[in-house]
Image (cartoon, rainbow, N blue to C red; front, side):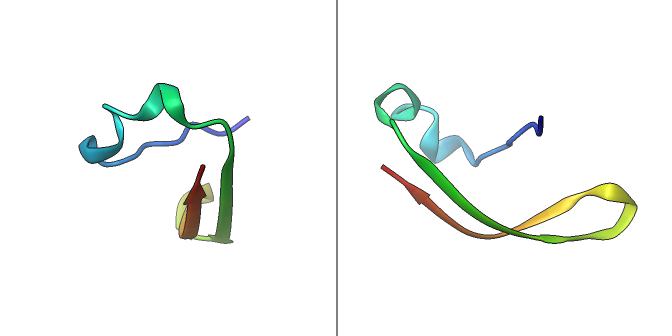
Length: 40
């Protein structure tokens, strides 16, 4: 399981999203880098 951290602009609408699609790549120190996101 991963913890996702989004900018504050998404918090107000957070409860309205039903699907979150992410494209990630491996980063340093075990972190994943978010390349693309689709919030529906």
